[in-house]
Image (cartoon, rainbow, N blue to C red; front, side, top):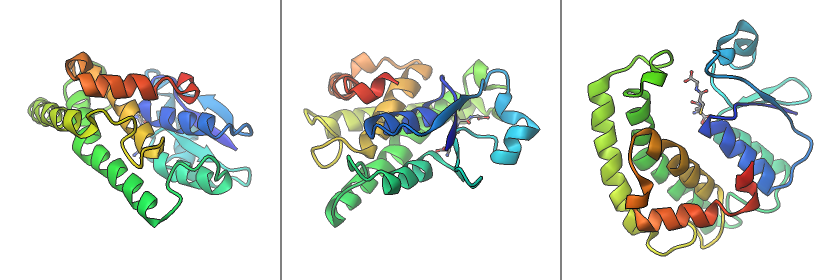
Length: 203
Ligand SMILES: N[C@@H](CCC(=O)N[C@@H](CS)C(=O)NCC(=O)O)C(=O)O
């Protein structure tokens, strides 16, 4: 299998963390430079028509796009350690927090960044007003998640899961890109630092 990745991008990083946590060894990594538009070449568009990274190419040539779809596929092939839930309640809880964090926190942070940051002008049809409104929403959401996380070690099920990979990578990458200081959120900072101590986060 071959994973198309990029060292500075949060989405492929989630897959790399997932691979490391499961100690999967048979995946070749090919890095594309987003800054040099290597994800917009006709060759890569043949693989990923949406020009987004990551993409996983299987040995038979089939392609899986979308970070979570790739991780779900790998979870089926390599079920241990389990990262998506072992029983109906765990599966629901991990999915719930993954989705809530994605829609309530990651998306506003992402739009705040993509629509206001000069570096994104080549990749996004920027709308500054929308970006600033999304940033404002993200700040509210950070306040809410500061309470949600409280002194919990993990966001779901009292154990490390895909929901933590989503939450922590979003907080690590997207908060500072919105010029927000995560240190202003003591519980979230403690949570991020503690989860990021796992060896899989050193990818
Ligand atoms: N929904 C996709 C999003 C992938 C995505 O947006 N990747 C970014 C890197 S983190 C990308 O390829 N950006 C290139 C661009 O915006 O042109 C997923 O979860 O995999």
